[in-house]
Image (cartoon, rainbow, N blue to C red; front, top):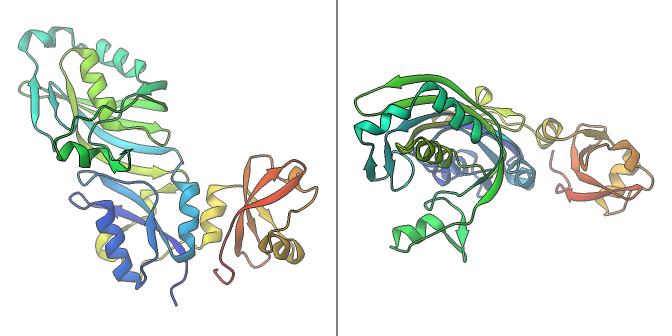
Length: 297
C-alpha cells in the first residue's frame, strides 16, 4: 500500500510537469499523483507533488507565494516571451542610449508591488475549456485579460552585456498566478528595446524549498513529507483531542473553538501527529474545510 505524502522534486529543463507526474506514478506504483503549479519545459526547479490522499492538500499549496531566479534578455522580443519562441523584433542600436542602470532600476521598480499583468498568450490559462497555448498552436489569436498580481520582491543581481543584448539576472518573490516571462516582456517594452526570458528556476513554493527536493533520477524510494508534516508547514497547527478528531471526521463542528485559530484556515492534527484535515472558522465554531481519508497517515 502506497502511503500518502508530499514529494518535492527538482525538475530539470526539457520535461513537462506532466512528465514528472508520470515518472512519479511509475516510481511509487500509484495513479493517484498530482502537482501544485505547472513549470514550463524550459524552467527548472521546485515542483510540489501530492501522492495518494495527500493530493487533497495541493489545493492549499497551489495558491502559495513563490520565488524564482530568472534571466531576462533585453533587446529582443519573441512569440512566447521566452527563449523557446521565434524572435519577432531586435532593438535598433540607437534604442540602447536610454537603457542606463537607472532606467533599468526604475523599470523594475514600476513592476514591483501590486501590478496588473497580462499573461503570455502561450500560458496554461484555460480559455473556454482549452489551454491558451493549445489555441495558439492551432493558429488562433489569443488575447488574455489582465490580472492583478503582487510582486513583493524584484531584485537585480547582475547585468551582463553581449552583442546587441543585455542579460539581467533577477530574483522575484510573487503571488500565485504571476508570470515571470510577462515581467521580462513588460520590462523590455518599458525600456524601448523589448525583452524575453532566457532562464527560469523556481526555488520556493510557500514553505517548501528546492534545497529539500530530490532530482528526477532519485524518485524511486524518495522521502516524502507526511500530510501532517506538510500541512504543519503550510498552516497553523491545531492539536485535536480524540473526541474532537472523531467529531471532525464525522463532519461535526467544534462549537466555540474558533478562538483557537487567528487565521482563516488551520491544520487539525490528532494526538498521533496524523492530519485529520483542514479546518476553517465559521462564526464561533471550527468547521472542516477538507477531511483526509481515514487511515491515511
